[in-house]
Length: 346
Image (cartoon, rainbow, N blue to C red; front, side):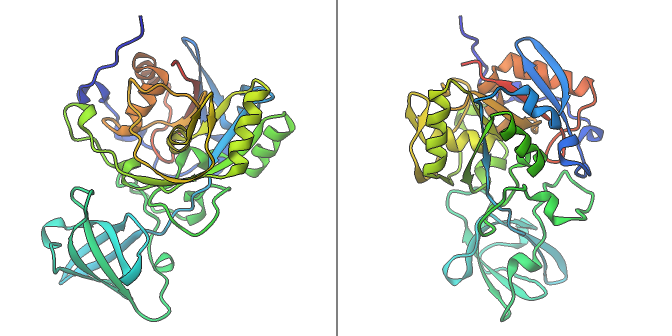
């Protein structure tokens, strides 16, 4: 009988000691620890061991999205204020943003930055707690140059090198409000070693926004309103997945955002449709994965939709056990932490 995962949010909670949260990236990207799940066992490796943990014919799929310097610090009067832009400003400088202090930033409120000014227009449709703002900059000012990398609030150490919050395959204009953190572990040299072993590499993009990092607040996880995120599965990636299927290989997603993109593009038979679209797919227990066979991912926050996704992919009991083992063995958690590799159960 298939495992029946709970729907109660409390079941996706666990005690995460502050000392287990990585505050800075490792010097060597591929030196992070990697727990490999194989049946009931959990073996300790390093990310640099990835080629040996996969098989010739497998296919790694990466998210190439580039992170925007989306955090803007200014003031409301004499009080410090902050905007986290969830989308790049569109016509008229209009964007959706998470704001602090929320009590002062209602419609008509103004945040003044050193070379920019944001007028709060009102609530952001579809983004509970967020605001729609209109941003005006001084001539020649690039917001991505004056903003800060949008590190999560649980990271308190300053980021000394902005490039460490970008993957080595990041491409295109800055678009995402967070990094695809599993991809931060990979290096060009490691990807070359994968290729030499006969492991393919394909690239998709998914623009990371609230759907990825918004917390679940509903007691029943099924009631969580998932947000939309744009993704693109190029023809080359769709063809690479087809070739992987033909040779009997496995599709390995590097990160939960790649899982969301590929499962949203599913075309049946383990294949995907090429093209750009918007995903509103909520991956939770009960979803039958049809494209992704393996997942390389970091350890996620308690009570988050990403932890729910992992439970759906690996099975709730297996995921819960793996997290307990990782904590007991001293793995580093969250965005700059260690990772785990395993194969889907359904």
